[in-house]
Structure formats: structure tokens, C-alpha cells
Image 1 (cartoon, rainbow, N blue to C red):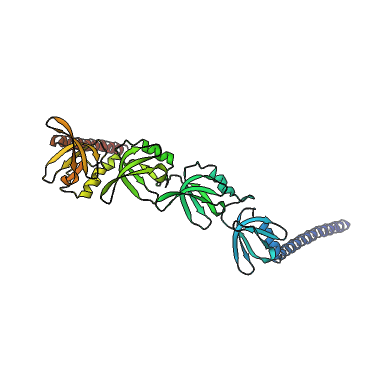
Image 2 (cartoon, one colour):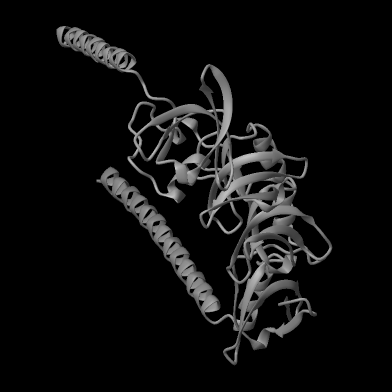
Length: 386
């Protein structure tokens, strides 16, 4: 009996210790939960009831100096400009060339950072200055101004007054100086997969023209975006002479390299008409002039007269009245001027004889047959493997 009583007392003490430990754990957990909830409520209350003045100060301190901001005052007016300073009393915003405006925190209803250039303490644009360091002078650039207008042209350099560019105006390329505080961004006009720069540099235009033989066809793009085709008649160190068709008359223009948007030599495979095709029965005067302007000097031409007769020769030049053609007459090579009013139609190349045409058709047919045989063999081999 004594042993049983001893074990009962021991078991009771053990149960009391376990219950005490559990009670302490529950008490501590409840206290921790209470403290956590209390701190969260206090934090929410503090955030909820933080004075608006302090919030505005915190927001102002998070915006880098020189960034573009929009300030909405308590009277509803909005001001956009460059953040110049942040003090304990307010902020400074510069909206133009004048001094910065001061805004006390009590006057500010909202403050936010907007998209725009990053301006340094000296008033220059940090992002623009970084971009200009990678743009060679004379290269094509695209500028986006603060009023969201876009300007495309050639970059000429940076001055104390702003960025100097050559941009189209009134059909000509004129020099403009755009103040730095009006520029939102400036980027080089790089060629894309399906696009080319809007403006070539004068050096590139000069290099392109130098590679075109005098008398060959060429295409230019004017500053206002028009495409003009003509014939190169002369090249100098500062520009080139181009013969083109205007209002039904052939005129010669002297163009400086910096007054054209782009220059290119047309693909002769596209410009040249397929030899052997019949020329139109009759062409009008402007059509004959336009066709003659598309033919490079020195090329073989076929002239069809109004009476149906044909004459072949070498084109030596084009004037406003006619063409100079070199041909064989009575065993002698002679040059003659043929007026446009004497020509029914003109085309580049000479007619193909029936024998040569049959050879071309035979080569084409043989190529088609060989291609069909090879395709069939490859298809049979693939079917056998599968």
C-alpha cells in the first residue's frame, strides 16, 4: 500500500510539472501574439495617420536632383520642370531659363517624378550629354523635345546654347540650335531590319556619289522626303551635278552634299528593262525623256521610229531636246543627235535574235528539268528512309 501511495504522489507531481510547463508555453505564445498584433496595429496607425507634410518630404528625398517632376499645388495648378533642390522647408523646380521656383511642402498637394531628361547642376542634360558622346558629328539623329515634338536631322555638335543640328525646313537643310532644356532625348538614327536612316552624313553622301560613274543613273531623297531620279553629270569636292526631269524639261542641278537627305545608285537589274521585249508602239514626249533619263550613258539603246523602223546604238548623252546616239552608218562610227520628236519609243538594250531567244528558252527548260529530277530523287530517298 505504501508503494502504491508513493507512485501516486510521484505521478501527481509529474503531471503538475507538465501542466505548469504547458501553461507557461501557452502564456508566452499568447503574449508574443498579443505583442505582434499590437505592433502591427501601431504601425498601421502610424502609417495611416502620418502627416502629409512628412510624406511629401519623404517623396521629395527619393527623387534625384535634376529629374523631371510634376508638382500639383493645393490650388489645383500643375507645374512641370526640373527638381533643383530639396530643403527642410520645400523644393525648388526650374521650369525654363529663369530662376527656380520654390514650393513649400504645405503648398504641395502631390509630387511625382515624370519621364524626361536628367539635368545636372549646371543646367546641362546628363542623359543627353552621355548620348552625344557616342554620336559622331554629321551622323543622323532623332530628337524628342519636351513638348513631345520630334526633330530628325544631322548632328553638328554641342555649343554653349544647346545642341546644333541640321534639319529640313522649307525643302532645304538648315542649321538649328536647340536649347538643352528643351530636349527630352537624343538618339542616333540607326538602320533597322526594314528601315534606313532618314539622313546620310555628308561624308557618306560624298562617298556614295564618288562610286557612281558620271553618266549613270542615281536616286536622291530631298530634305522634304521626295525621291528624285536622274543622271550624274559631274562631281566636285563640295557637291555634284545631277540631270533630272522637271515639268517635262531636262534640267541640271548643282547639289551640295549636305543639302540632300540621301544618295544611292539604283539597282541596274531593277532599272534596266529586260532586253528583247518589244518597246511600246508609241511613247509621249515626257515618257521618252523619262526613259532616256533612266538609261546610263554608254549603254546600248534601241530607238523605234514612228514609221516602225528601228535603230540601235550607244547612248552618249541626253539634252532637253533629244539624245546623242553613236551608231554605225555606212561602215563608219558616227554620232548623231536624235530629237525626241523624231522618236516613237526608246528602251535600253538591243533586240535579241530568234536564235539567241531559242537558246535562252532551251537553257531555261533544261534547268527546270534538271531541278525536277534532283527534287524527285531527294524525295524518293527521304521516303525510302522513312
